[in-house]
Length: 358
Ligand code: IPM
Ligand code: MG
Image 1: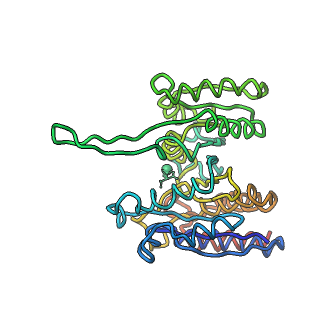
Image 2: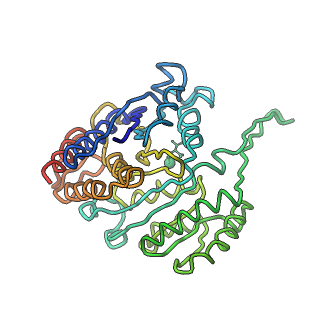
Image 3: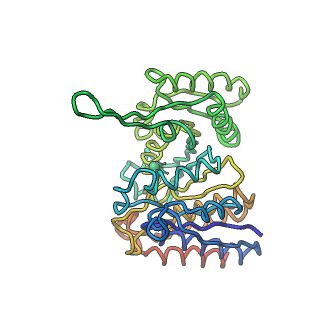
């Protein structure tokens, strides 16, 4: 019996999360596993209900669960709250930190049926299969922040960027090991020509590389990487990078898969893994059943793989998604001429139905 904390959160989170739960319930039926789902409040929705975006009960529930399924958090409604009460800073970052989820895995895989849905040329993206390993509990996101008044009547704001050898080593080892199980190519992304943390990053990576002679290591500056991802994404196998660079590069890389609505993520490293789509709460389309639930459904597959070691079950979800894409079912973000438009719930129903029939 696996205990899963379900945190739908804000905006489209409330629509996509139930579709992932539906998928997991279909898996339960099909394979005879047993999942126990417990829902809790997080984000702006939690703030509205109880005055804090990460209520104690939610954190407690997460800590005693085997895995967490999160929808999305944040929205314009809560943008003007004091910073510590904003959903991102008050809930998502503390969750990542408290649970020691330092490794964020974002697989950017182009499902063949979606080749026409991307804004990029087919020959550039055909066969793209990149794993981005993003450091998730350090860097600018967690450095000390401050404001002071300046003599000219303005202000000065400071965000400290720091990384220790320990923090770099553990994420880079993770990436080397992931590369070993794939095509044995690792690209470490930094800005070592300018930033001191990046210089330590590069030195640490270079030292560690001696332990992984079977993995081909390259270093790339982050600006160049942003360009190379669009110019020739097939050169990449595994990318490892620090928190902020990883945030930016994965939004960019998601377009290689057709839509950011296709990009799942797993945040692991601590005792409990957290699984969430890489996209945000999309307040502009919330409540309209337009959201693509596949990133969340694919995140649930990652949960089965990484937290529960249920590889066959995980693969079935991925295969079903691939087939449904081939058959031409599309949520609006992926819609092209000649395809069949479905809403959020219909997409979830299709996935569950196919799992049960398989
Ligand atoms: C992500 C998101 C978050 C991040 C936001 C919501 C704080 O953009 O998971 O990529 O920046 O890490
Ligand atoms: Mg992001």
